[in-house]
Image (cartoon, rainbow, N blue to C red; front, side, top):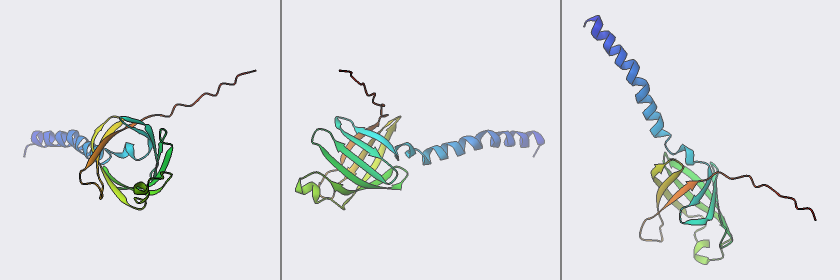
Length: 145
């Protein structure tokens, strides 16, 4: 093999190796930005979600219901939610305490993702879209009397 051919191979390796490793790293981390943060369900803006690496808290501002879930990431873009407790008085909802619900992130677009989930008590898969939002600091205005 000539030194010119060896140089071309070396240049190709130097150029394409970082690109290949970056794309592999990027695909493995593709859902990392959704592990924690604040989210809202599209079309149901009254439901606010706060997620930490171990728990997910949901607050329904319309029905005044709060729920706590244990979250476990079982894959790069797959997690399970297990209902720990809820203030919902509905018997069917309360019967779901302790039941795991698998979510699969199917599409990502910036701060949004689409997911599908299956419930053991519902025959069809359900889906939705969550959007990350940044919490705006509330400014307190003091009014003098």
